[in-house]
Length: 395
Image (cartoon, rainbow, N blue to C red; front, side):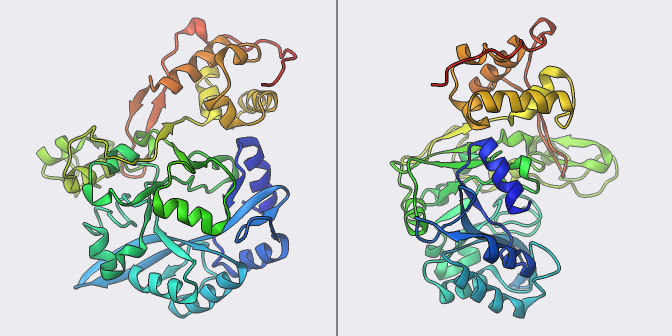
């Protein structure tokens, strides 16, 4: 996840703005300071043609009214200077050099106060807000509302990250989130995973314009989010991975939230937690929502068609061929007409992309740390070898 690799993959994916991640780590901060350059967009930096927004994720460990809470939060900073001052303050609460995501003995509310005290322009966003273990609404150590966590400063929380295991329709079921902007980030731990979730804007925005678009939920600028199929996330359903037990919320309630194999408590997933807090039925859509599109990463689609691992040479060669022919991965997944794809891809791959765009997939939900499986139904006749590349005109 060095800058050079992040830039290479951002260009392959079709991403023009990346979060730096981990600016709290001393060594990474020095590299950012050395390599990033000020850009034409105030508050954003540039490296090899890609814009960067200064971001960090931190883990907060704290108690409220005698109850222990564990929560991850994202920090968005308007400058390297502000980031340095944030780091200097956060060092008081634990070492910043042990991990890229430091574990801080400070409440989420106090983190918010520190960040806002250092820079009114900076802001925080609760990370992957529904995952069981370390999140705002997590079943194991979270809260039932934003107000319960941030109190009178809740007005400073204008966005939450939905995370891989939830999507906008799940969050729309809570009327308390109607005024909150839902953002989707890739939560990448390797460069090839960049863009598996993303936010799409109509134009280049500087730091403050981006913040305003999020705060006001400006649909003219914030066009849509790119989403995982949430069932593929590691904590969508309830279960116990050591016993291979996977349950829907309804099933786990029948078992009193206990694993029928070993008798230990089940890990309660995101869908269950949403249903616990929801005050609306599934399918409800409030006004002024930001649209979304669900995607499967291109290498995973190719792997299914070729029946090979995503890391295999055959899959990677096919991936690079398509990306080079059609500019970038997101272009292939979202925009390229199927008739164009047919000139460079097999019948099976074109059919798979078409089915993915229509949401016609087979799903096995993830649970208790295990990723779910999203399968595209193709018959054997459709899984033919791709044709030889032909010269085509780009649109």
